[in-house]
Image (tube, rainbow, N blue to C red; front, side, top):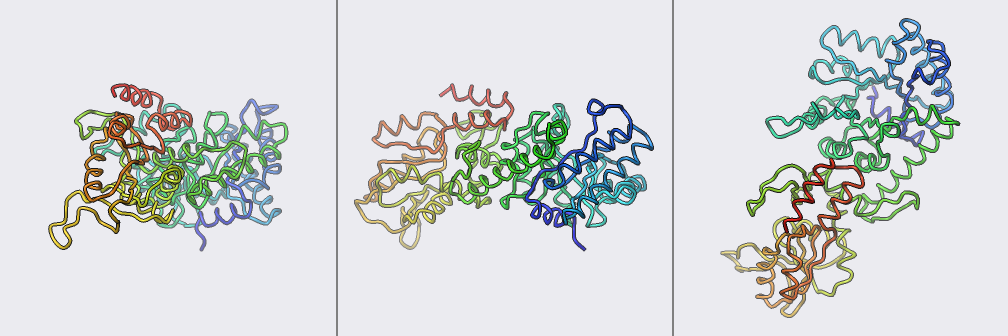
Length: 484
């Protein structure tokens, strides 16, 4: 029997859409506050937008408010979606937005109500009571559940951002748990589009799970930022719920179509970036390479915000750990491609990557550009050739030093001394991130030019521009930079 997300993906392919049309009959949208008015309003949405919908998401509260008549209206709306599915020749999933959360026979009754009585295909759930509150809803693989992880409301962080004993935040732990609950490929997560930093982090924690990302439009979430942070490498994995921007548009059909097309343009741009080519497929709303790089580094945990003790003993509000790249080949390919424009403008015979963080980066650049690679050892071999430099080279050749980032430049000087001691020339160092802590000036004093793909200030600008990191953390990082 087909599982829920394979069923969803089949319809996504058919309709070429990740747009989840919300059905929220607010009182202010109705000519009169009755179940019949809510029904007529909802049926119009279904009829106008079905050709462009990846899914429909009726909100149970706006029907329950009318009592038994409202419940009957909700059932009629779901039946109408099934009729539209027959008309277009592809079953449109119905996600009941009910946020249920209970245990034992109560949870079983809620599941029967949603799936058997109403005929919904999936439901939103609160995970607060644990796995046994989720189990009745996902017992049948053809039914799905989207578990609340990091919600779109302003007060979400009061509980969802609390730190646990192992250092993970509550919403990060929920993402980890949901992966274990997804044994039948029918568990997803709810992460607000208004929380792009969390969206990127959850995608890194749960790379395969589908995410329902509410908050685009009226709540202030940015569509492109959310998709860039949340999409999987295959261009899927995120459903974008939109209700008021469609239901209150002059032409609902055109509004849904335009949103569907805008989402697909962003998917195409991201997929091309994921291939490492940094090509923009559309001239509308172009995403710069710095934007994608910043998002990718945040999503993979290569850039973290908090309080970290540096090697120097200083406490820093930002930390960069590019050793994480080895576990993210797509992002590693992006990073390698980002070095290429700088290297194309330099004259050298071979790359010299510094251990340890830059070795996978240097290897990726070597493979991407077809350039020979060597590396200076941290310690000379005590056996065999007892080499200080690994790889083939000739005395008098020029090596360009490749490293992940630079702070003061001290580690670069140690490596340069080894390389020059072996008869190589070094005039340039290329890094991914310049922390702007004096390395550029120190290297210039020794006749070596430092080239950086991005500076730390530029990364902070991208995080601020994309609303990927809270403003206070950006301010703390900028204040820290002033000390150098």
